Image (cartoon, rainbow, N blue to C red):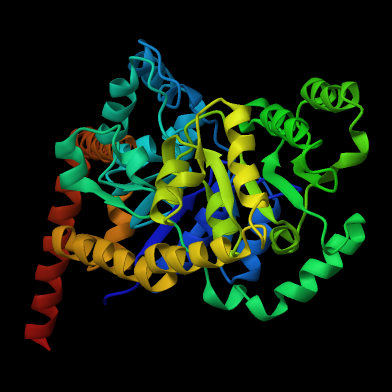
Length: 465
């Protein structure tokens, strides 16, 4: 009997107090795959991701798995490190756990989540590897892409920027570029004005006061918080009413102190608001006039930029990686700054603030463009095309029975052990049989003669009767 195949979807993180862009994208992907697969989200621990997944009706299981960060920043000994990882007891335990779950397909999220992909390949289970970050170009990126290619049946890339690290033949044979989207019912433009006024009021920001902000799950150096501060300090005198909002959790106390000291040394503490992590990120976008994404690394995509554009806000970012791809697709490449230059960021923000409506018309224009390029309908078409290709090229993923799945995912090592047990049992049985035949041959012959004698006597009595 045909059934909806089971897909184990492995998340590399599940933060307890906030949710990262990668987690948001994975949760969205889970929801979009449920018409085709029985999706089970596997997370390393309980957190915001698992809470939201259960609220969406997605089955959640907890299994902690070590990450392989060397895939993101590969060294020359990457393959040796991978082999060493696969020789650990943790890896063998993961294989046993996956075999017990009996999935039809495995999906692992982010390049650093290597172990589920390797375990799936060892068990003969199809592996889909979803890539959300751009592998560091340090001269060894080809080793990482080769490893990912070896332990996957299919690749899902979040952007062209991520995909370009792979050889053309790999991209053509087993890769889908699937940028993220959103659920239309979650976007409620009619409530934006009220939400804007409410949150700005809670921050002490007036209706006409320019508010420029950056949003990140964690305020770490690679996200360019100090670049945002330098940009803001260069603008504060020209725009004396402007305020600057920083949203995110401080992960590194030393870096947090460095950033705050930077502001204090300029005597501008009253111009900055550190709002911490926000559960309702929509209210933050509504309150802002300009969104700045000063990331210092080439982002795989840039979900913050997409969300800002979706809420009708002008977005300024460095021209690198997926951020450049997103802003170009939105029709605003002129808002891309020179990478690593806070002065260039300030120039782009100044361009927006000098407009009569502070970029409101520009933001709404970008919103319409982003809907046409990354909207739910476009995402649905891309997803359906990918699944249709799977059905054509890998029909066994969809046309099997539960009994066959359970049998197929038994590890090869266990099959060998079972075979050895059967052989030993057969050998023991043969030895016992031989012993019984050779131990009492006379007794057996005596019993046979006695039986024949009783049969003859019985027959004689019957004849006389």
